[in-house]
Length: 75
Image 1: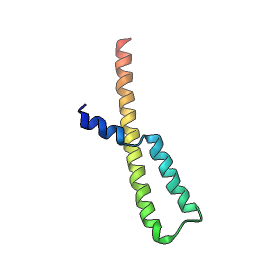
Image 2: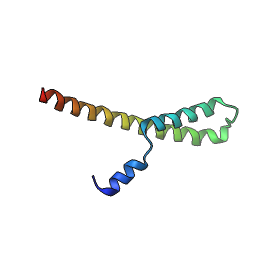
Image 3: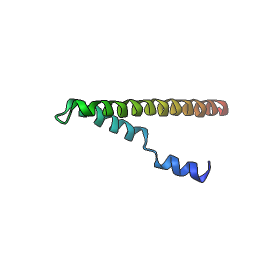
């Protein structure tokens, strides 16, 4: 992994952090601060974040499969 890739990966929020942000966005829709003007932007942010989380979880699942296959192969 290049130094640039390491820096970029280190700057990305974790899945846990992204889920917390998504939770805050969802809570906004149910809170007193909700306004129809801001709803479209918040919805777009939440949708993008949910897609990122899904990609991250898929990658983690694939990584786990690879590690499991390696582990099972060593047995």
